[in-house]
Figure 1 (cartoon, rainbow, N blue to C red):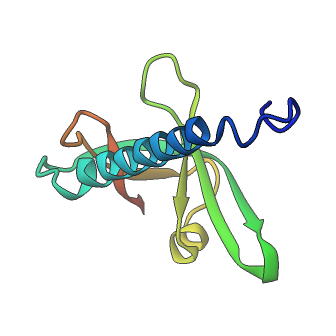
Figure 2: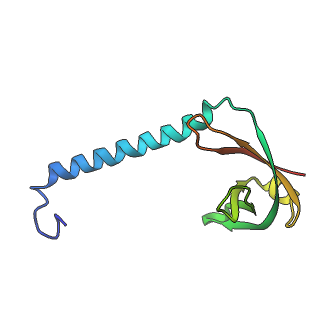
Figure 3: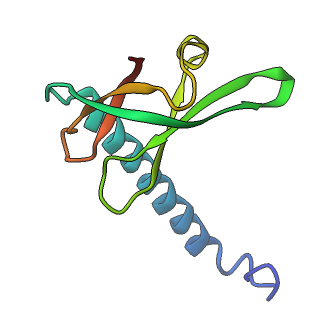
Length: 118
C-alpha cells in the first residue's frame, strides 16, 4: 500500500516494526511447537487405526515425501494424515491396521512419534 501511494520512505519505520513483530511471532511459534514435543515426558498412548490411503509426493530433483492417511479416532474428524519414512510407507498397505504412537504434549498440543505396522 505504501509503495502504491508513493509513501514508502515515510512508512519505513512502520514497515520495519511490522517485519520485526512478524519475525518475533514466527520464532515464538517455532519454539512453542519444538518445546511441546522435546520437553514432553508423557507416556506413549498407542492408537490403533486403519489406513485409508497412501500418497507419495515427489518434489524438485526427485525427493519424495510419504504420507499415510488413516481413519481418525478424534471426534469431529474423518481422517488424519501422517508423514512417514519410506520404510514405514512400504511396510504398510491400505485397509490394514497400524498403531500410531501419540503423546499428550507439554502444552497440551498432541503429537506423534511414530506409525508402526500392526
